[in-house]
Length: 488
Ligand code: NAP
Image 1 (cartoon, rainbow, N blue to C red):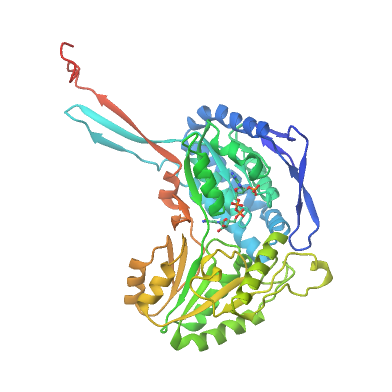
Image 2: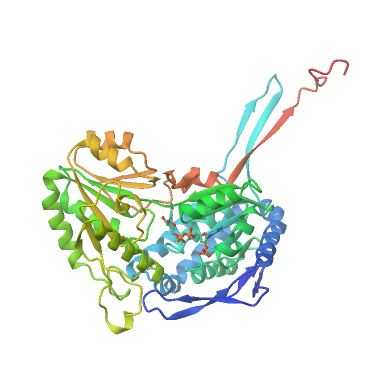
């Protein structure tokens, strides 16, 4: 593949490429440009040059191009699903689901045409008004992760473009081809030259340059907290606005009066969806002492029945790369050293030869881990879950809130007083009561603490891509008052 800059597919100036391996087989999938700072600068210049014209087209025209891209994606959706299976190691059903999510976001955001409103506020005296209206920022830099490589690209492109910004998208180096496929569909839909640019390359090499560039006005990034913190420090140079969707450590709470069958099914999704590589993944289970045994029996039975392996026929596929498998091994060995028990899994599974070089890990359940352990405090981002018994409501809420992350949380209970009490006291951007995620386009996806800044989705999310501007006006015809300047 190549970069897409100012309406042209281009190699990087150094002609160098990086390799992408398929997670389920470990085989080479393809190569993508190892772009330089000059390539990055060219993409930003192209976006800046295209900004005025694009921002001054009508919102209906912009929406029609976004909708058209959505229609083309819909008509060719199998291609995207295939890439997601190959490039991200998605199991087929989840590749299909993610593609539906892409379409939902594109059509949802394009529906904001002619719906952005501002305010007219009275001035300091009669015949004066202040017009407050929302305008695009300018060049948006979209940095996307590998775990939902299509949905995250769509969630950033659609609102940026709908609101009249121009975009440089730099996808994760683990999933460049998904982003390329989506960008091609926007080109097919007629996106004008320079409005949407794609550049690949390692964040560690071109990231600082991109985020601190003087022509970048907004950086929207989904990824790790570490990268988010670095971006915050680097954007002090250009004061770019940041939308940062970072790590998570979701508590999954099962109260004694819960429908245990439903809770267990939801936890299967919450933990093993996308092999646990999700920011909203259930990472720590708190279960009431009275139902612990019964609940664990139902849940562990489901875990042992889950098929891991071939993405086409399994319920759980591989992790993204070999580094992710090593992270799982490190968690297991540290947990074992600390005397915690491995209730299930803990190793790499034995799979048929076709997948023996893939990046798989068994579903792993850890018992006996303490609240201050890595299992309960650090983002695992894989198919591993710590289990802890609780018996008191305050203890449960306290432990759930005791995290440096604050994105998703889950509660299963049939006591609606308790559910509403928990909703008041839980310090997370999302609480799912008696249901699974993921977040909806019309919800505002946001987190507390180290999960980041701002949010995405809903009218609040689209407004993150708009800046409020003020125009003061006097239409009285009176002599202009220059207070504090006697004599004029
Ligand atoms: P990551 O390593 O932080 O990478 C995210 C993006 O930032 C990639 O495009 C990456 O490029 C780029 N990047 C890396 N270093 C950079 C730098 N110094 N400056 C600018 N950009 C840089 O995250 P990931 O491993 O792809 O994704 C996993 C993380 O994302 C998890 O922590 C997960 O919780 C989080 N996540 C959060 C949400 C949410 O909505 N809150 C959703 C999904 C995922 P390279 O790939 O080239 O390094």
